[in-house]
Amino acid sequence: MTLIVNQTGNELVSQLLEYRKWAQVLKNFSDETFAEFAKVDPTTGRHRIHGTFTQLGTETGRWSSKDPNMQNQPKFTKPFFTPDPGKLIVQADYSSAEIALVAYLAGDESVAEPFHLKRLAARAVPFNTGGLTADSGADRWKLVASQMRAGGADLGRYADLDVDALAERLQAAHGVAADPHGSTALKMFGSAEGDNRKAAKGVNFGINYGQGPRALALGLTERGTITTPDVAKEHLEKHAKAHPGLAAYLQGRDEQIAQIANNPVACDWKATFELWNVHRDLTEVGRELTDLPYKPGPDDFADKIVELLDAGRDLRAFHLPEDGGDGDRDTLRAQFEELVAWAQRFDGAIVLQALTGEEQDAGVSRPTTPVGFASATVSGRLRYYQLPTTSILTSLATTLGTGKSGTMRAQLREQFAQEHGLTLSRPGRGSRLQPLSRDALKRRLADKDVLYQFVKFVLSSAPAEVQHKLLADAYRDVVMGHRNRFRNHGVQGGVGDIVEAAIADIADMLDEYPGAWLVCTVHDSIVAEVPEEFALEVADRMTVLMIDAFERFAPTVPSSVDADICWTYDERDALSDAELAELRGKQQPKPAATFDPASVPIAA
Image 1 (cartoon, rainbow, N blue to C red):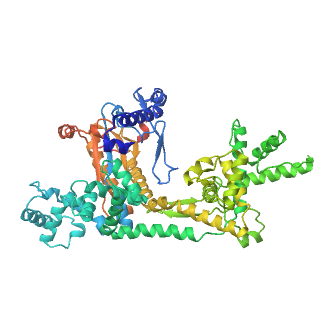
Image 2 (image 1 turned 180 degrees about the vertical axis):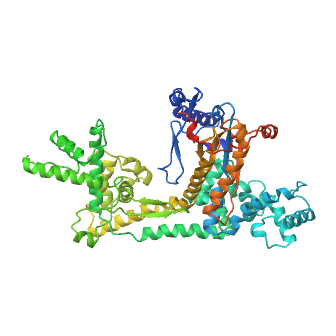
Image 3 (image 1 turned 90 degrees about the horizontal axis):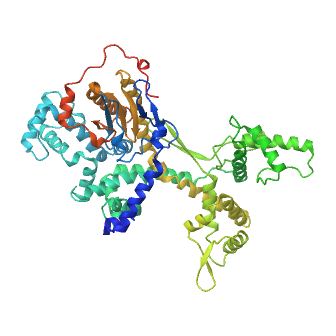
């Protein structure tokens, strides 16, 4: 729909898109939403909105927010979030943090160069009294270069350049070469004019997520730069030539995941599917235990399982003896408890490694080690990837269910479809039935119980060696399904770690200012509410702390931070130059004595 609007300006589609936008807003923000979340500030009696932030739970390590989600506010609501009277909002944001970090990870100087130039431009400010630009003459930049060298300015990687070469870099630092996307456009196309910078920006961000030609073309087109997959493919090839170190780094990440996929560990598929069945039952039984005042344990589940089985409930993994003997039931109930305790060791139904010889010798009856692999960020934080059994079943189903007409798999597919009242094929030529597409088959087998039964029905008819190959193929398919997340984890997860480190430093710093506190973090930005007499000083210190946090983990690539002082949560409400000049007259130093933040109650 968006593509149609971009290309034709179709009024009907435009109205549908507008409806979709507001329908989503109303879904997330009903009339009662903010009244429900408003709380009374004990220091002022005013009603305030506070999002609840969670530091754990996201793959990237970034914080998440709810009640309300302050990280997902539409632009039109942001101006309504205002600080207390006499306070301002300080928003500090990393500039192109992911690109700077991947430049460090890849050791690619061509990607890092714009960030070094930007730092050089910042250090030239005290010497650039004439306000020179990239269009100023080379001789005037030589004078600035001489003054910087004579004044002992920190020139970083350019310290060994002669005056002429340094002047060249200073001039470049005030032009498009200091912009990561403009610099890439210059390398890809020889110019950053027109749509070239937009295309370079699309590749710069998309490449870390494993975007191929089709996804890149769609993304660029939706953002107004009409691009075909063939053109997008050329963009990707040019980007790889422009930044060979980055291309090699990303290829290395892809090769790592391929190595994992092509060298599977020994799996215990029988135990894996047993775990699947137990978790299916535990989900059903858990609905019967919601009234307990505590989290149910294995004994609670075992008691309820026996009760439900007595009442005739069909549980896939649990059965009572037909003779109803009390002694047998006591033993069986203990076995149920043991089985539940085993299943609850895992986060869900996942693929399990086979027991080692040592474990078998020790009498271990069931596997306890999930199949998985890890990726580490620059801080050393690990992200573990496991293989959900549902994903294995889905992969198997799309292989088993797409057999051509006349094959054994096609006959089994149609037999299963007839027995379960499903349509798992489409009419072909004559009376022959053709398999559905993979996506269509997934939709028809969306019910997990039906999915499991289908795979079990078809797979059980195959010889053991065929079963082994199909399971190995599914294993490889599911591991490769993690490819893009694995490729990107070091970058996005690393920036998440850096932002968290900066948050910790900034929180400590804000404790020095009465009435100042953190209110939000979104992606690569940190937001604080600060009394206006401290706003400029806090903005400067936030900038320094964020730069220091980045260079702590990526010491060879400088970062840059943009800090705005705003009237509201909306960055478009930043103070004007005149308002900032007026604010400077109100500034006061932080209290000389150490301020105890506990002495000022924070809003409930």
